[in-house]
Length: 264
Ligand SMILES: NC(=O)C1=CN([C@@H]2O[C@H](COP(=O)(O)OP(=O)(O)OC[C@H]3O[C@@H](n4cnc5c(N)ncnc54)[C@H](OP(=O)(O)O)[C@@H]3O)[C@@H](O)[C@H]2O)C=CC1
Ligand SMILES: O=C(O)C1=N[C@H](C(=O)O)C[C@H](O)C1
Image (tube, protein in one colour):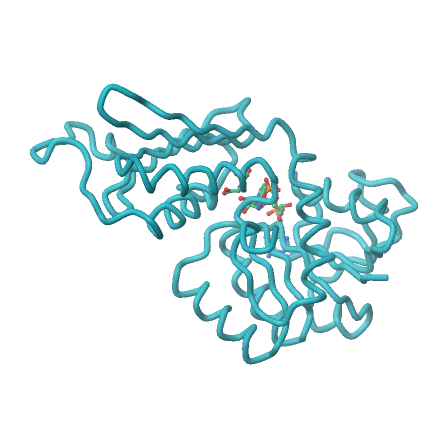
């Protein structure tokens, strides 16, 4: 039995993850980590059935001492995720991280820490299988098309831009594409930001609208042709198989993995 703790259990992703872990054979939800006092157990919150007698902690040290989790799933916010991941690694609790918004420096530090601690850690900018395939296909296409624009579209409650998936897509493409400044060399923005974020000359555009969940198009342009690779997550269930896969995988590794494409 893998003992799991969840940070962010009250959130959109957290609620779905709590139900997923509670129902999954071989996983046991032993604790929730919150930053404010919201109740003694998840079952006391209106969000969950009353028989979800999972204790809620605001102190990670107490959570570890009392419930001894094997894995911490983090689905919180860009502000808290780095510290949660670091604390988990220091306590030898394996992090499975869905929260996005890491800086490159933070990823480097956590990679090093996981190595030193010999503790498995998975940071997955996107848990949905289709999104991982979209990124892989985009990397393949970029070998042949070096003009590319990424359009990521999310619900309007999202805190970080560009999305973790948008950044990861650009990073994967950059592994096979030379830096190239796109568009007209003399182009000029009459409204700042019109051409999107610049990643090695690729442009990333972030759309935020109520009604959206998580969507991305990667557009490649060539002489007389366009190639569009698109993925849509229509609900948060689309991420749950990936979370379970990561929890079951992270207990068998001793280093940090950034991106599901490296372990699928
Ligand atoms: N990797 C993937 O496949 C996916 C990743 N995500 C990412 O997951 C994260 C969460 O997304 P989502 O569920 O939509 O966001 P929500 O805002 O719905 O949920 C986040 C939850 O975390 C809580 N929270 C904030 N800070 C802390 C903290 N320090 N400790 C414990 N809980 C905390 C919030 O509480 P409160 O509101 O009271 O502050 C909230 O309940 C985002 O970074 C998002 O980008 C989302 C979907 C898929
Ligand atoms: O905030 C979200 O919703 C999502 N966040 C992740 C990201 O930033 O890429 C994954 C998915 O796109 C949903």
